[in-house]
Length: 397
Length: 83
Image (cartoon, rainbow over all chains, first blue to last red; front, side, top):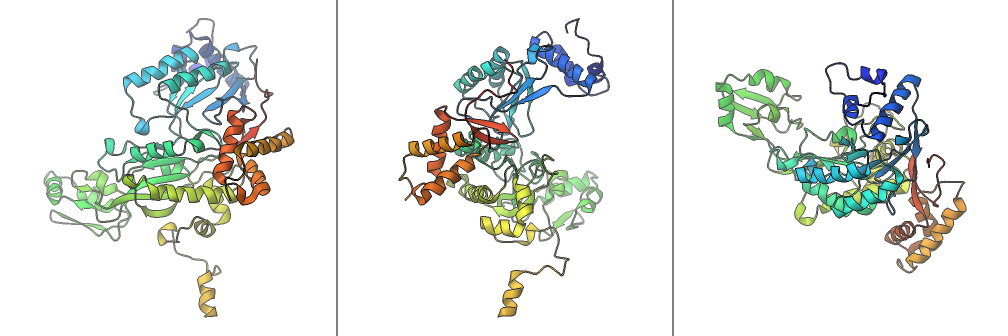
């Protein structure tokens, strides 16, 4: 790092056992943009205030997303970060890269940007941190020439993302990679041209382990699930028992619905009581696997605490076919009905989860044409002062 | 019947709406869609309005902006931009 840059406050962040982004930045401080980034950050820590200005208009011609504008509020002190825009690049499904692909990206970014990256942002994109307005179009041209594209930002469909799915995981109940690819290509307009009330994130996880944290971090979580019984290989169960593995303690007692029993070396599961938490499958991977009748559950409304508080997703559809041969028609049909109802009745900056809370789940289900189901609620009604239309109809009859 | 109004006409109408709101209210894509739907009713479809917005943006007459939510605005130099 350059000798004249003193960062005593940032240096504190390098202490302790964890890797530090300050150390990473210092390793690149021979670049003016990175050096001034460190300088402005140190000043922010010293003065206890931020020095970034929001840039709302910068972007690529024709695109409404993919670039997040930032300017320094004190460019005279730190000219290297006078412009410090972020570029989001649509990541490949499951974050599978070749070294060649990563080198392509970095060659472009070294030439036109700071060289700093965040792999990956919370939505899933590759995040390229720090460039100037005049470099945006050249970056875009070079990225698209190599078949890359920008991701989403603003009130649009955010870049869909997924777990590694069947590429490396035997628990995957559907092809998360194929569905992510399909949704990304089908909704290019929605991804690049903001047309919604607010952002809409879709994450695909192949099983209830939910490795993309879709339930907490996406407006639409598509979670792989099965309808029939968990598959059991009793000979593998016997091997676990013979090896001294304590199935009682590590599996049976941890089952949330207590639907598992062990008789001798034979494991039995009452699948009618199974809530598909997949704990048993995770602990006994050689003996247990998801059932054969596979699809996905769809939950809506997860979000981080921006505008309103954080929300966990609500289950809307307990099981839906995920059929690649018919172009994932069932998913698209539902998705478009959701967008249409939200578009018509949602408010500015209202996420789908907040929208459902405002209009009520009952109204929302009617609006998108989904039947009410027991799986959509967490507990039976306990308030005797709430009445249902059906009761009135019965009395009338 | 949808498709009766040329896309260029819709884009012109939308541009007019954006121009009249400039400096007063940031309009979203939905606001433009509602404005032309109110004018033409079922003579236009949702795909027509999407195509008109695409034309409006790709022609450079309007740009996307972001401040909290996304909007469609006349091109201008924003106050926060440094030289």
